[in-house]
Length: 312
Image (cartoon, rainbow, N blue to C red):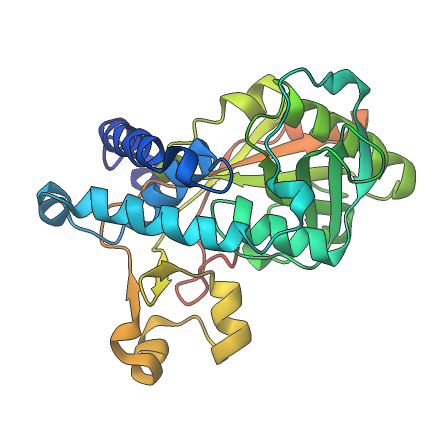
């Protein structure tokens, strides 16, 4: 089982190539764009979609450039549909220490997940909290979504005395372009306090981090999250060349099993072809007892059931 934890490929060179092309595309858009596209968003989305190309295809002239341009255009379209307050450019003089949490409604949550999160998919279940620098949701800086733990093989790893209903998953975390430094750390700190006060049964939080998209985990470690497990990543799924979650395919077609999907949808459904590194899972304890329990747990190596890819 240890073999699944060995790095399969060096992600850094691809990240560098994509980042260079993202800069070129955003520079070309310039003032022609109705508002500023987030560099990080376009970078992550491009890396996610390039996983369906082989090394030979990536070496071909124009592959990366075409994909960056395609995803930038789609991002602009999706962001035209969001509430105006989320489209405005952020001022650089916001004092994040004066920000506060607000509960986000379905309209805001759907817009943020679709247009501003690198997965582009909505998680409607759970608690949605936004960090705002203005009255209500005016001046929204970030959004965090905490969903119920519904991953069977993760439920089986919980420390003794911890029930699945006592754990939430940080399923989406977004900070808008131009938000002040420390926005995300303040978001998570205030969210933990909010959960502790309003739902004292919650003992700790879990979240996934994907090194295949260039995430290093340094932010979570600096915010006192604890390495919890590493999980084999079997594949990413795409519908009509766009990434789609297993959760969405199950909801729309009754299955996320590749063979069944391809029999129904044919060539519209494809999967990633590049070697993948395992996903990192981090935990954040809400109380001192939970921290002691988590610190005593050895980091696990997880292999999901063959027919159940994690539905994000």
